[in-house]
Image (cartoon, rainbow, N blue to C red; front, side, top):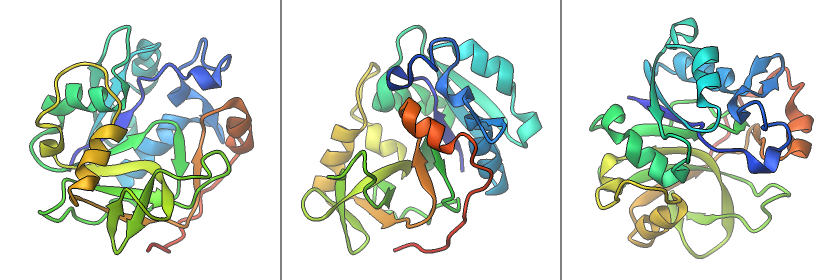
Length: 226
């Protein structure tokens, strides 16, 4: 199974830290943030990783290279000067991801979630890893009931880790668009499964949250899922 790391964003909320350094290269415990992702993916058996790039993308290519130092093969999806957002970025990268379900993870999170996620059942277009609502997202994103995502109910926060079928994007055109509305449509049709991860998870989305985790030396691989 292939994987993708979303790394093209400008990181506006992290400025000025991201004025001269793309956010996936921000150091955490002495290593670039994206290096932790690659290490986790390689340990989970992923061999091919697609990374989308835009803002200062050449810095990521120079730092990570072809992935051999991390035990994976890396393909880059270059979006040019203007990033395509989450949904558009995945659509642009589909030719590199193949015809089977693939994993996507945000480049600005840190997680102890034990990859890989459960196999995606045929009736579902996606499987999302949810987490308890953090302080910065108290109202959550989607509800989770009986292993399925719902639009109504007690909402949890989307972790930024998901498993997708290419068919989810079959009606999408090339260009910038967010992923959330597409997920909402699939959830409304009952075709998205999910789980709740109670272990370590951090969203490195602002300078304050980044400072809280930049010296993190380990992640707890808490096995508790629901």
